[in-house]
Image (cartoon, rainbow, N blue to C red):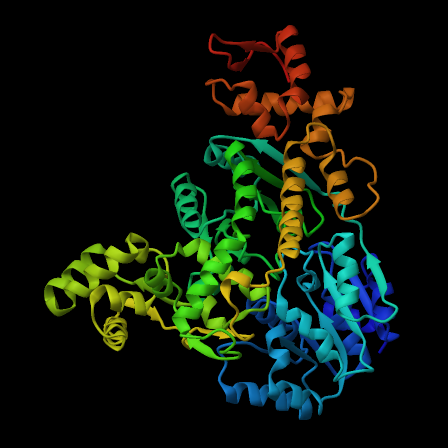
Length: 639
């Protein structure tokens, strides 16, 4: 079949989007290829279709389990056999999936970068007919990127198993430095680089200084009908804002990584099928979700970098119809994002102090302990050595980046608990089962009321020390409460392991790469300052600013962002249309009147943009202004 026939049969389209056909032909010609294509630009087709044309198995490396599952499900719905291998699967499932890639008809195998080093995958890949290696979210391979994942660096080594197989790397957002790094780190040969413009002609960007963000959010959602995503920074905010919107008659739900897999799936499905209009979420939501009709994406907090913002905002308007990306900020937001970056780079003295504590914790002598591992519980460690938890966490991450230690995946996925009954139900259970009463009270005292609304990360070791009981008894009590449906208890699959990768150093002489740390810190501070400049720039078109940031020659001003609209000259035809819209909004106020600011918000225009038209309408006696400054329609006027 030709590539056009494959496109028609499996995707139902008659023609390709811009750049797609050129990319597909380069991949089929077995050229290493880098694809930079904005969210919604059709990146998946750029590796899925050529893989079908080439025959064999396409191995897809991607960082998120949710993304894997979503793409596998989409391929299966199109009649294309695909499987994914991820943490939590039984070994028999993994074994069967890999066998089907060798002996069956599987065309796509999705894996996380961590899987590339496992013996079972390496041995089975040697027996597979692999036609293509696709690296999704390829910016993760670059230390210059905003989402660096060290396991991505292993892909080049994995490629040595497949010396004749081409690689296609794909990302939605990468600066010129990151693009160069992707090519270098993947050892791409004579890479073909395809860039789609970062301009989105249907997407209107705005950033508003706002102290009362919830009120402004409500106005935005009331003014823009249709599906919406609201991004917030914390899990607690997702639920609070969703409930607040629900109270104001907007169908909203919340989503974050702390929910169970079943809960996340149900919430996502309700939103995709429009049973829920607004999803309030952390950035755990949205990647890989195929919903083209999102009309507005609102950020309630300032993002840490423009790469993440561009991806998240770009989930609006993927159907190429008019959509809005709104960012709400205040002065504290702009100060906090810089402080968050600084916190991630503890002083060298803090690193040495934590390293010394680790050596004491593991009873290691100077010069010994290379590749030795210990069970590691962060909360218990900090309690033992009187260390602040947050600073210690960032120090451990830095020690890992420096190559002194390695933290197992279990360190990042602790045990979690959520109470499944309400306050009254829990009280009744405690009265009926007094032998659990003290333990339940201890849990509530240690982890608070959030246990009733979200999964909360816990440490069995810390609970045991606080309760002065063996850890196995704590685990038994938690399991018993779970069996009685009082809590959901997701037990950590393995004890977190901390491995010393080098012989133990004298902490006072720890060879920290101070210059490298400082360079990394300054790079991330530079990203933060680019966000602040984007937010506060008083005149420049926002689309042009994004193009310049990503190394694209800026084109014409978009004409639809808040900056462009604020300086657009009045057009007689626009003025008449604007006049009609103003009258419609005022009449909808049912005689209560409306302030110019409210009117501007509802029309999604700046006060400057409508000011001249309002002055004209007042002068022409179409409108009148009452004593408090609200606008009313004159009864005698005709629209």
